[in-house]
Image 1 (tube, rainbow, N blue to C red):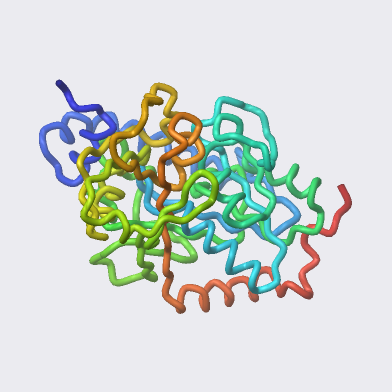
Image 2 (cartoon, one colour):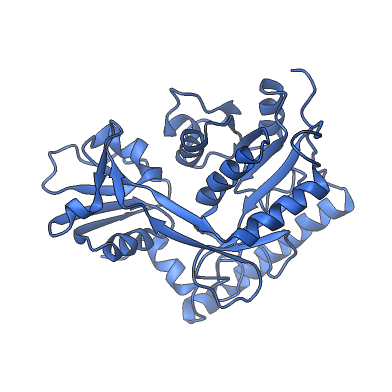
Amino acid sequence: MPRPVHQWLPEQWLGRGLAVQCLRPVSWIYGALAWARRLAYRQGWLASQRVEATVIVVGNVVAGGAGKTPTTIVLVQHLLQRGWTVGVVSRGHGRQTTDTRPVLAHSTPTLVGDEPLLIAQATGVPVWVGASRAEAARQLLQAHPGTQIVVCDDGLQHLALARDIEICVMDERGVGNGCLLPAGPLREPWPRQVDLLLHTGPSAMADGFHAQRQLADWAVRANGDRVALASLQGHAVDAVAGLARPEAFFGMLRATGLQLAQTHALPDHANFADWPTAALQRPLLCTEKDAAKLWLRQPEALAVPLQLDIEPGFWTALDALLAERAGSPVSSTHGQQTA
């Protein structure tokens, strides 16, 4: 049975084999279109829209997950600790709605997307989703006029929203084979200037800052109860992940000493609509991002949180950039307009 494209193609991006060479002409067209788009913004033919808040964009230059959402979460938590008033905007990948809307207490992944829902639950700050991040930011600021900083989750290529600070996140893949889509993983040419570069996995690159990704030593049930992963050791368990790179999650589970009997690798943002509801034969582990969707079908599943530990120098550099471009939480006047 042929392997799904979402599993096969990323493996090709690590080298320059026959498949990559066949896709190179398409990547040249993609690169020309991307270059023309960037030129249009530089020349003012397309307008970048500025909002009345300091905008921090968290994104990456490669297709697939690199740790953007966990970075956004710890970034927001850091900003809150520093006294800033924060909101988040996101496209809301995987949702079945097309409007601009807030993430509310009763929102579901179908309405707002899995990642915005996770960010809202983890941080407690206002989160808005919309295809236009600029429009989402405007509506967020109208609803929460005291917001000083808007963090844009996965918006590095969304040039329609003007930004004050850019954070690029990379994992252990780096830039892969260095080719543009679809011959390689790059969404745009690299290197390109960003304010902060964060590596969430082992990297041969000397520049940038580093973070360590690891799973929590516990999982959470749908009712909020915690289960120590150590209590599952010595027993066969199953795992499912709807991620860009599900094998990375499975590998981290194995690294904790768990014995995985079956793994289910699903496409990123999978909605679990076809997931069976039969009684589980073994404990089933999933990611926090997938939990809200999976629990509707399999409420006994256990979600394992991902924790991100970023080196102190990153926060020092970020605070210095904010002092330069946004002032301080006390003196900042951003977002003081009325709704």
